[in-house]
Image (cartoon, rainbow, N blue to C red; front, side, top):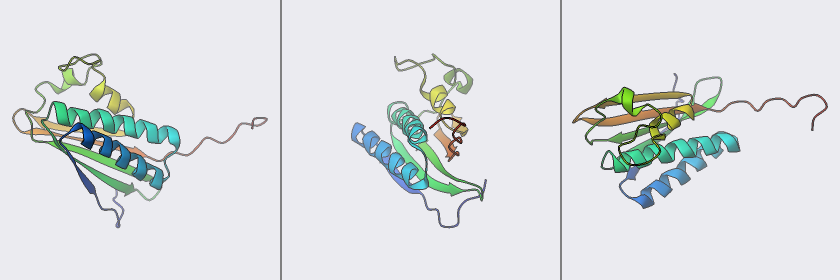
Length: 148
């Protein structure tokens, strides 16, 4: 993956419910500015919302770094959610649909992973967690003959 020479990360704190709303707003604005379509923007905001909430609830707070990308063919958006909480003891289990430690539906991590193109988790018990999610602007399909 190549970084755009002009790309600089925006770092936002995640320490309260108000911060979660701010993260969602900033991700939507960045995605729109990069040319993501409305459906892609919604997927990115949903993934960001889930990951920011996990950072707050399970990681005790932290930050997100949002960075525009350019790989020479298309633009993208990278989101890194960073906390210094307890870490994830069993990552494989945590990535399983339906697994929850917080009483929710258990779709946070696995759901966020499905909404982006690239997804990586760096965690160790007692050391915290960094989750990196990347999405790329995809082309809108050409209209079919006789439609539209």
